[in-house]
Structure formats: C-alpha cells, structure tokens
Amino acid sequence: MMCPIGPGPDRPEGEEATSTDAAFTALLEDSAEELYESAPCGYLSTLMDGTIAKINTTLLTWLGRSRDEVVGRMRFMDLLTAGGRIYHDTHFAPLLNMQGSISGIALDLRTADGGRLPALVSSVTKTDSGGRPLLIRTTVFDAGARRSYEQELLRERRVAEEARRQVEEDRARLQEALAVLQSSLLPAALPPVPGMEAASHYHTASPDRLGGDFYDLFPLDGTRWAFFLGDVCGKGPQAAAVTSLTRYTLRAAALHDPDPVAALTTLNTVLHERYAMGDPRYCTTVFGVLEPVGDKVKVELASGGHPPALVLRQDGRADYLPTPGGLLVGILPTAPFTSARTVLAAGDTLLLYTDGLTEARIGEKRELFGDEALRDFAKGLPHTGAQQVVTALTGLLNSFGDGLDDDTALLALGVPTNRPHPANGTPT
Image (cartoon, rainbow, N blue to C red; front, side, top):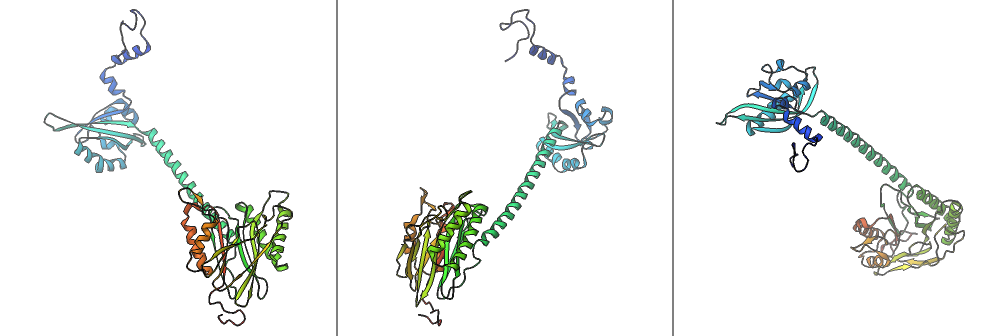
C-alpha cells in the first residue's frame, strides 16, 4: 500500500510527515546517477571485447582504483585473478555468449593492492533492435562475508571429519581390545574329549561391550571331564571381572571336589563374600561332569538358576533335563543346589545355552522365542551330532536379526554314532 505524502483521509491536513514519509521523499530526490554510483553492489558496462566503458563508484572503491585508470584502459578480465581469468575464458564467456545472460557466478576480483575480492557476478548482453550484441552489463556483489562463512563451514567440516575419523579409529581399537579381552574369558578351542564330540559358539550382541556369558570344558583326571556354561548379570568390565572370577573358581573347585553341587556351593560362597558389601554380583550357571562308561557317557550336573540343559536323542526325541531348586549363584550366603543325571548313548547330544537364545524376539509381535520353540526346533533336526546341532543353532541365531539383542553361548557335548571305545580305540 502506498504511504500518503500529503493530506488525506488517513492523516489530518497539517500533521507533520512521519519518518517513513521523509525517507520516501528523500528517495525521490535521488537522481538515477546517484543511485547507480552509490548502489550497494558494483556495476560496470563493457564493450563486446571486454573493454570497460562504465563503472560505478561502489565497485571502484572495492577495487581501490580510480575511474581514469579503469574506463577505456582495462578489460573486465583485467580485474580478475589468474584463476578467475581461466574460468572466465572456459565457462563464463561461452555461457554468456550462448545464453545472453548468466547469474550468480563466483569469481575472484583482483584489487589494486594485489588482494582478492570474492564476488558473485551476473552479466547480461544488451542487443540492438536487430538482435546484434552492443555491450555487456555486469553486476558484482561482494561475497567476502559469504566466502568467510563458506571457509568456516569447510574448516568445521574438516574438523568434524577428523573427529569422526578419530572416533572410528578409537572405536576400532576399543573393539579390538574388547575382542581380545572377551576371548580371554573363553577357551581358545575346546579340547578333544576321547570318545566324544564337543562344539561351541559364542554370539556377541555388540562389539562395543563385553558380554557376561561363559563356558569351559577341561579334564579332571584320566577319564572324567568337567564342563560349565553360564551368564553373569550385567555387561562391561564389571561383568568381565565376575566372569573371570567365576571361571577360575569353578576350575579350582572342580579339581578339589568335582561334585557339581560342591562346585556351585564353593562358587556361591566366593561370589557372595566378594560382592556382598558393594555392588551385588551374581550369575546363573550349569556345572557338570562327564564320565565314559562302556559305550555310553554318564552325565551329572547341577544348575544355579540357569535354563535347563536339553538332551537330544538319536531317535529324534528332545527333552529338557530338570534341575530343580537351583538359586542364582552368589545372591545369598547359602544356596541349595540339586544334581541331576542322565546317560548319553551313541548319537545323543547334551546342549547347554544361555538365555539370549530363548529370549530372542521374533515375528511382528516381537514375542519371545521361548523354551518350547527351542525344543521343537531340536526335534526337527535331521542329525543330533554336537557340531551339527551347534551349526543349526548358529543359523537360527542369525535368522533372528535384530531380535537377538543379548549375548548367547552354546555348548554341545555328544557321543558320535561311530564312537571308539576309550580303552582300545575300536568302534562300538
């Protein structure tokens, strides 16, 4: 809406003009030449060969030059830096010649003192009535502030990229260190057990944190072997410390008294005494002993709050081995543990696992995989050899995708169908 200058319906006659009116009046008093010379941007006109025919005061001031040394004496290219002249010849001029106009091109102008003036340049070719080009009119905007801003953005981007690279390197080193530490909490390889087959697998939910799952298999004497598998509460260095203490305590306890109940009782005492006065730490675990007898293997085990072992028979049956009454290990000063027994014949396998397997989330409803589903999966396996069982379960774990968000340990102990007799090595 136009602001009224004289009297009108919006202002009584004689009222003093507002500041807006005064500014508008002052604008009307400026001549076109004054507007051209003092514009907030640079203007220049050149002949078709680039010779400067006209230039305004604003641009002369930016360049630090006088009108006499520029008009008729210099070409537009003479105002550009070496890089600017190359870009002008290869891009700017050809585009202007083809299109008749070009807008917002970044060029560096050269000032009288040898400095650089970052600028955004727009040009248009003026033609006569017959379409023949007469001259080129160019507008120049000072892009120094923009260039500084872009350089600051570039600098910040480089700093951010360097920081990200450093973070990635630090994360890689951390993952490598965690992997080394994690491997130190597990046996490098399961020892060969005469007349038996043993297989294991460890799934790490995150390479950025230490897991608390553990397992082991080691000889007690010339015929018997001890095994255990468990899960320490929590993650990270604290859990790793408990895992290390648990493994070495169970190994030492088994060599002193291999009875599964005695071994878990000793571990319960050690964990409770170590952590009762500070941050409570506990674990779930299954500890057992294998003893070959003829062509079979006797198994005795006890559980401290851990999911029951699953026994897979050669005939396709799969059943859990009940271990009632086992409390979490280390949570109370004393805890009752009860042993359970079974016998493995040729083709049978005992499977131990941590709850990452049964607590995986599946389907659209993200329901727990559960104990029943695990038993049904085991029943459907065509082979029940220890390595075959672990291989099948590894594939199952991989199929869970992001539904598997916890570490998972597997330990399978089986009797091969062509099991040699431990005494003479002949197949039974």
